Length: 112
Image (cartoon, rainbow, N blue to C red; front, side, top):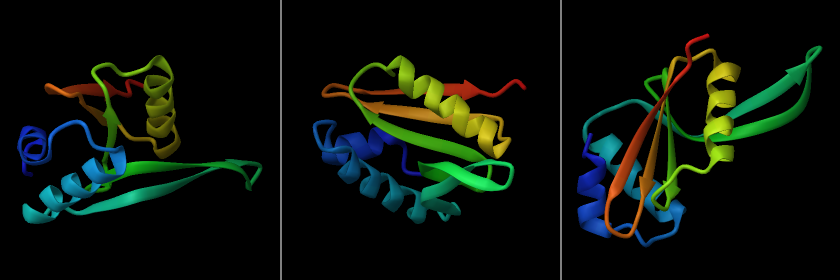
């Protein structure tokens, strides 16, 4: 895809997440990757929905992509992303943090 640095170079890192998300979607489309934006994940107990998540992106039905503003991944975002991985039984998530001066990319691996 257009790299995260390409998105950063064109729009910067000071925008709201929703605008960064739109720019990343354009990059994903540009290279022909299959993705779902705002992917719905229900949380179930005994077949009943007790909650829900919305992922920023599910790419190629196997990689979660979360976008954040700032330089660091807050602890709650890390744990939330691991819950996404567990809920979907996936192995890889990427968190891309758009800061004012850079894009910081972290991989989160589900080793369960």
